[in-house]
Length: 353
Image 1: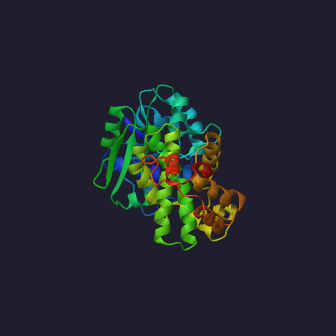
Image 2: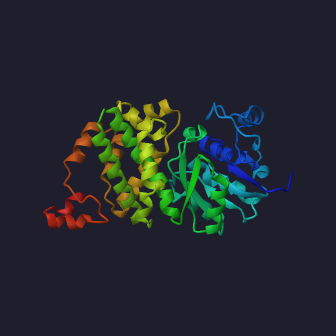
Image 3: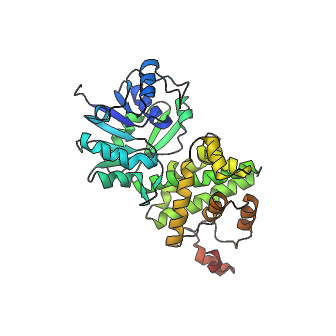
C-alpha cells in the first residue's frame, strides 16, 4: 500500500459520494469505504454509483473499497458519512487504523437513541482528544451532483481543521463557510428533519403559502429554543445550518423526511409511509427522541408534540393542525420578547405548557 496521504470517506450513500467526488475532481486521492462489494466493483469499473446517483460520473481519483484499513491508514482527513445508527460501530471499527492525528469530520445528521448523543459526541466519546468537525447545511446530494450552486458549514473549535476542510471542498459550485458552534450546527441539521415531516404533511393537505411560511418560521423558533436549552448559540440558527437547511428540507420533495410527511398527510400510516420510501427517514427517530427530551427538560415545543401524536399515535392531521391554531398566542421572537413577558400583554404564559 502506498504511504502517500489521501482522504477517506466512510459511507457509500449519496452525500458521501458527492463529497468524495468533489475532492477527487480536484486531483485529490480519495478512498471511499462501503460494505457492498458489488457497489465497490461498479464504482471502480464504471465510475458510477447507480443506486444513489445513477447519472453522476465519478472522477478517476476516487477509489471505492470494502477494506476499512486500506481506506483509513495514512489518511489525512476522514469524513464519516454512514447512517446515524451505524456511526458508533463504524468508529469503533476504525480506531485501530487511525493514528489519532487525522481530522475526523461527521456529515451524518441524527441523534443516538440510547444516549441522546450527536454524531460528533459519539466520535469524541470513542476517540478521546480527536480533532472533530461537523459538516452541515442545505446540501441535497442530487443537486450537488448536478453542480448546482451550494453552500455548507464546517464547524469546529479548531481553526486549522476548519481551514483545511474549506481548502479541500471549495469548488466553483460548492462554497464552505466556517463556524465555531459545533453543537449548534450539528443540532440544526438534526432538528430540521422533524419539521420537514410537518412540511410534507401540510403540502399533502393542500395548505397555502401563508401556512408554509408560518410553519417554517415557528419551526425555526422551536429549533432555536430547544438548541439554546441544550447549550447552543441561537445565532447559529440564522445561518446555513439552521434556517438554510430548514428551508431546503421543508420545500423539497427530494427530502426523505418531506416525503414521509407527505404520505402521512395523504392518510397513510407510518408503516405505509416508510414502506413507500424504502427506509425510515431520520426525522422519525429524531422526533421521538426530541419529544422525550423536551418533556424531560420542560421545553415548550407544540409542533413537536403535535407531530408526535400524528406519527406515533395516528392522530388525525387536520385535528392537530386546528388545535395548534387555538392555543393561546405568545411572543414572535422570544429572544427579543421572552414568552413570560407576554403576560404584560394580557396573556397568561402558564397556559403554554
